Amino acid sequence: MRAIRIYEFGGPEVLKYEDIPEPQPGPGEVRIRVIAAGVNPMDWKIRSGMVGEMPLPMTMGLDVAGVVDMGQGEVSFQPGEEVFAKVSIGQGGYAEYTVVNSAQVARKPKSIGFIESAAIPTAGLAAWQSLFDIAGLGKGQSVLVHGAAGGVGIFAVQFAKWKGAYVFGTASEKNEQFLKSIGADEFINYKKQRFEDVVGKVDVVLDTIGGDTFERSWGVLKPGGFLVSTVARIPEGVPDKYGVRAQTLMTRSDGEELAQIAALIDEQPVKPVVTTVLPLSEAKKAHEMSESRHTRGKIVLRVAEDPQ
Image 1 (cartoon, one colour):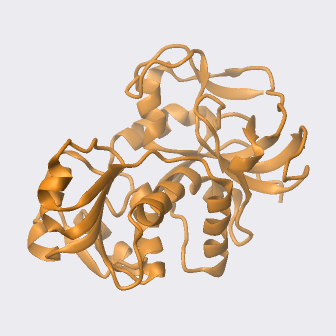
Image 2: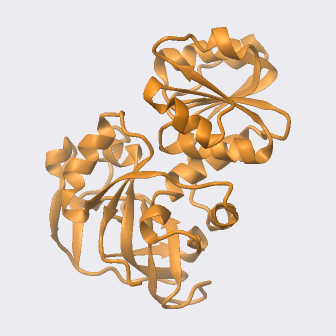
């Protein structure tokens, strides 16, 4: 089968498009014939060595949508079922086939295709786990989403609005109407406005930016509020200083939560946003685009033609 592999850590040029043996499922695993693979910032961070040393060679990719091909042992899916999943690092989503533990898999949303479904797992789970599992965001509360037009931010805005929260979103000016259309109550142009001057005090901050944006976010939380960052480590003692709580997200694979997200998408209050679709062979270009940090929504690699 064809796959994207790395034999060393480095820039996009280390991505190799090549033939490798098809993987075989182990006990409790299903094999998925991949139709589409989502591209995430974590992909190029892994490729560049930012995440740490890992066994090489490695097949890249974390997010897949496709069709179950086979399973071994007690699994929840039958051959022919259309599914999506966040696979573990090294299992390889950028490939024509991948194997994954059955518990990490969910039936893909019925109302959308494989391309859009492949855009969901990592970003959707990151937003869900940040807002609900960690911060406990609820109806009537307020949330500030930094990087609201990015992969995680787009889901966070929609999930928070669905939950009944008041949503502030930061992004560049070109994304104002888009973010309002998906549920942002107030848009903040980070290039022209300081978010501290707009939001007052909020219950939750979801930071996908880090750096100065992360540092300035402590001051806009209500007492007892929650700061969740997808990119920054929480400095010791700082949450106590502000009387708030904080946690760095480590997104976990969870088939049950993916199934909840799929149900929301089929009910229509939430939609994935894919702005670029490239063939698997152009993974290098996809990484270059993702690494620029200026893309709206998600980049997806088309691995095979939609069987429908």
